[in-house]
Length: 141
Image (cartoon, rainbow, N blue to C red; front, side, top):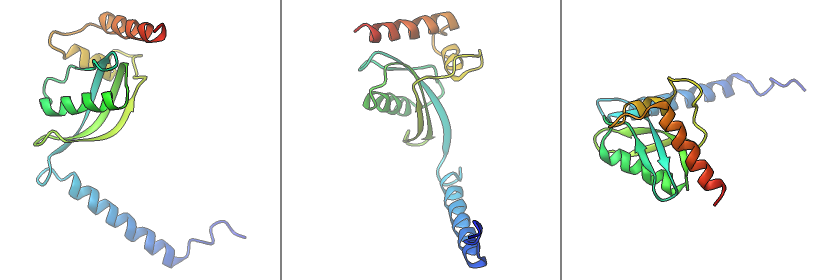
């Protein structure tokens, strides 16, 4: 049996209609004039129950609190990066992913960028020291 036999013209038309509807829904969702959503990353750092959002001074406090609450609900400890869509009017979050092993291999990584933008700024050495100390505390608990 030919593996491409399911690709009849009728089936292809259905697939195209579904893709078109999906694209229309996504365009409506991300239309800035209707709902001002933007993609953001939050660096969370701390012990279980004591997570803090590092940096992100331009993001609404409600969005930061919700990001912290997501990290707490997932039981995140140490250093993690949360990627989400944020509604700039309401602070509502739609979580894309929680990365519990964030990229820290280059100075341009998300965690380092957020640390540099923190108030007061956190240098790379301090950020790595905090992340390692949190990991050691967790390991030998």
